[in-house]
Image (cartoon, rainbow, N blue to C red; front, side, top):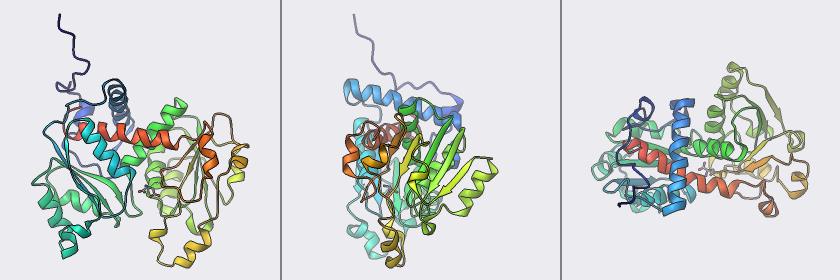
Length: 327
Ligand code: ASP
């Protein structure tokens, strides 16, 4: 007797929620409400199970992704490429620097997007300017996925961060989340903070004065009646935080590098600091890290940042399948 297929992704069951991402751009986290987040997490969990059991599947065979990166990337670009390849799709990788493309000849973002969409089914874009993903989405007729636009947003990172919190703690409610570091320029902080507004979360923001969370995000938190603390010192939150979300100072966003020098070593999580953290606290980081987490913390079971990296591939598999109508 023929063994039944393990995965039947090529005949998706349409539902109101799944249809919300088909052919859509993913530009900002404001597009995601809890039912849509749950759906993405369900698909990502299926992707993980599939990956662990059989490595890959042919869900996106015949589909082409262009990765267009105007800024450096390790995890975002390679996890999108891995995601596409695990699903048997193909990739046009413009990730080694747009200096090797016609951008260096002065081509506009609009024209580059209009060109690449002729070859592709979906484009993942990273760009140094806030709002660039929205401009690309307006120019394109195929889905654009924002892989970071300047100090603006990084929605796919925020989804994988949230997925990691859920996986590590089993819930998104009743948690005290402490964001540490460059809250001013850190786009992952901006996106994750907005996603967490949907849940029963207490927030602490830990940064030097210069790198405080921008006012519009603070106002959103106030409007949502969230409990919010601000402090300069990790020691103030380490004993009560469930999630310690540490970030790098975003050197590339500083116009005055002397200011960067002043704040770059402001905080550093060490095993000594972690000795004051809760037993079930989780330490996360979108990476790359510079000096803000001591490498000796890596062997602490509470250090979740490399597990977080792997979740990035599952979330991006889910999002690619969803926008291409295969989830
Ligand atoms: N990789 C993340 C980003 O692209 C975090 C960082 O670069 O610090 O925003």
